Amino acid sequence: MTALATGVTGAGSVAPETPVRAARRRPGAWRFAVLAVLGLYFLVPISASVWFTVRDRARGGITARHYTAIPGAEGFAEAFTRSLALAGLTVLIALLLMVPTVVLVNLRLPRLRTTVELLTLMPLVLPPIALVVGVRSVLAWAPDYFLNTPLAEAFFALQEPALPWILVFVYVVLALPFVYRALDAGVRGADLPTLTEAARNLGASWPRVLVSVVLPVLRTSVLNAAFLTLALVLGEFTIANILGFETFPTWILRISGSQPQVSVAVSVLSLLFTWVLLLMISALDRRRGTEETA
Image 1: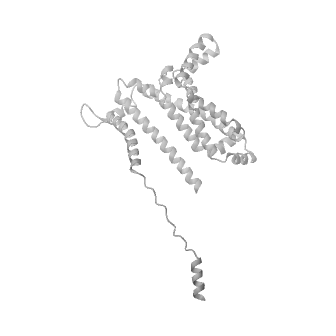
Image 2: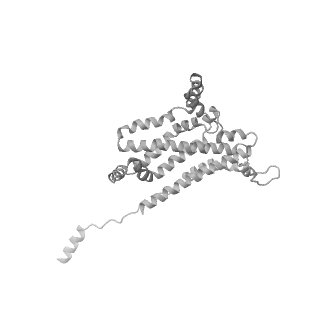
């Protein structure tokens, strides 16, 4: 009887299946081939540029005199300082415009999100060459009709060669798509309604909320927006050239005929500077993610 019961129990029981671990997929050789091709696509031109700047044709070997000659090159300090000032003003104005706008749309006016997105995308739809031609036509037309008036003086002030404010305003328009996208991504990833409501309940004013609550939460997004705007301004050539202002890119073109090695050396250093900024922003983003996880 016991044997029969044991047999029945054994027949009715089902042995658990041994779990089978899914084999890890190893990346195919084609992926490494694609990465190798992309690496060569970027590294070969950069390496050729570096070799062009460090090769000493007269004596042979390697020299760094083209890099050491950059600070003393004619017009470098003025053009680079002017571009940095334009970049700083553009970043400041763009953030002052877009941070409150993105926060307001997210908190109070969600129905206007599509409208704001379309408006900020307009600079990508409108070709920059058409924009700068229109700006130049207005700058040339206004003084003739408003001569000896405060409006004409304002137009002349916008075109001051030392600090052309007209470039700042045009660059702000061009930077709007990148600034809005960076800030909107940060706002959607944060619980701003809860944070702002808590700050308001504690008696904080809206300016205090923006400075003490919103900006710390959107720190990485603000840095990304500032970096994209800085890269845009330091690399923009067409608008400054057509309007007749000498900025960092137009200065590089101007000296490329008389000092080609120096112009290429400046381009290499500006590329390295951009990479360093990108790595710094990535490091700050990782550090913030580690702090939030902890």
